[in-house]
Length: 94
Image (cartoon, rainbow, N blue to C red; front, side, top):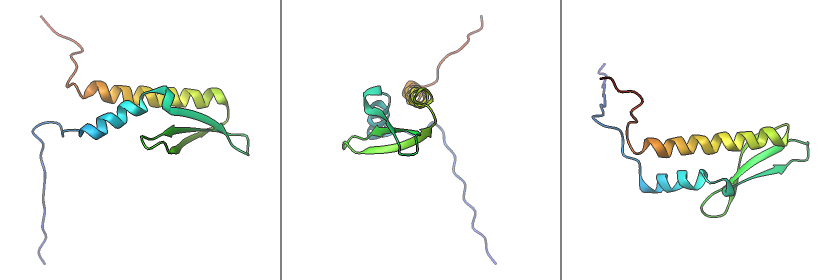
């Protein structure tokens, strides 16, 4: 029996496509998000894609927690956009 093994190494970070960057920019804008109330009383967060279709993301018990979930998602995508610029220096030594 013969086994085939393969490994991959990266010398640098994988390059992120321009469409992915545009998508993250789109999701980091709060105007592309909304909260809807479901028939069971829960609140659902949704985002609008670039083709103007709405996609559900999370369900929360209160409108405040739904808005906090949206704010957390926006913060997540904003951080991704910041890290595209490369490593961030957090401390230097002299």
